[in-house]
Length: 330
Figure 1: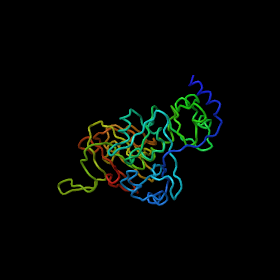
Figure 2: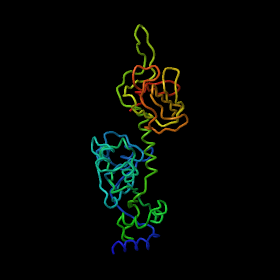
Figure 3: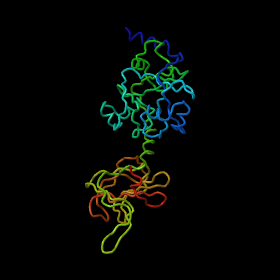
Figure 4: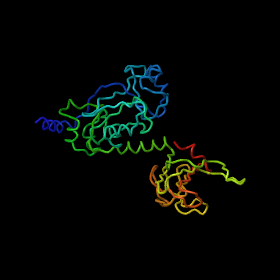
């Protein structure tokens, strides 16, 4: 009977605007913000602000949430953070913990964690002490804005009103207010996932195309008998057939046999005319003109061309010249 009343209240009050809610103070970092400027704006000593947020440096990122220890401050009232939706847990990131570790610990997926925390600034470089919401299921958390109504949310995300009411334990109009968090079960956080993918590529501009022992470094090398040449990349030894992935997103500019000793070679063109080369493959799994995401499989380790054993010869070209890949890889 209680659930039936819930649904009736929902249908009666869907068109009403939302009120106001309170909570503890948070500031969402915007482009151009600095920790020193925030300390000054809110009249909080810089060291206190850093300690309160468990920050080891003054580096902050757009989208990051910073806790302001004082609500009433010289710069005005910080944004309010409401309580999470029903059945959500809180997890404070400890030193040494990673997003992947949190996902494994709670049996989540990346989309479910991002859906519960759509304003995450990064998936790889979160500060110790940041609070993560742990959802009970896949979905998206949204915060109601002033003058926003439930029909706006229902229409925008195409969600069933009864499902929305049940997931958020809404029984009457008094349960709904601006600034509150609502959980939308089954809604995928598409925009947040796309944004975080772009952030990840910026943070990890180049990733390792394969993991293994480096057998030859960038630079001049001695070939014996008084001869030498300049090695334009690094050689990474790995078992025959090991998968090779794209170090960075881009478009395949070449995929085939090279007559210059590279054997089966893949070249990927990136923004800014940068290019990565992957040589001596046993098998090529992409074609010219194909767009490749960072981390996507492109080939298998081999020993084609001028090679003495299975390995990947990897080059990074920026500004029409080959540079040391180790200066780019993370």
